[in-house]
Image (cartoon, rainbow, N blue to C red; front, side, top):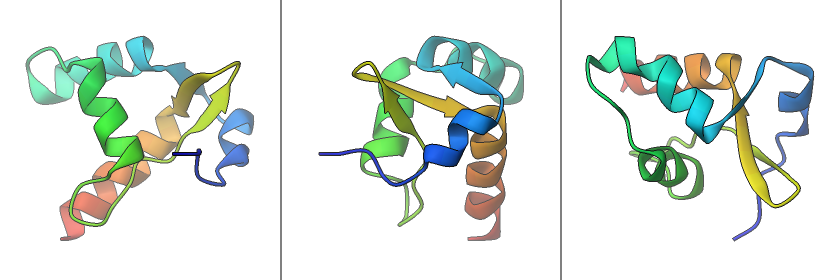
Length: 76
């Protein structure tokens, strides 16, 4: 599966999946596994996907994309 057209992520506060997991830990109160982020990005949750792009074959996202994802999921 190819990345979605979210190239603007590179102009935001870019995070690797490991960094994103660390950022989310205080929100969820427990460690978030990288596979959770992959699932949010590639399959989504309830029709909502985490925005991402690939850099050198690695999935990266951004603080802003995570915020948008949580906001959209909170509206459901």
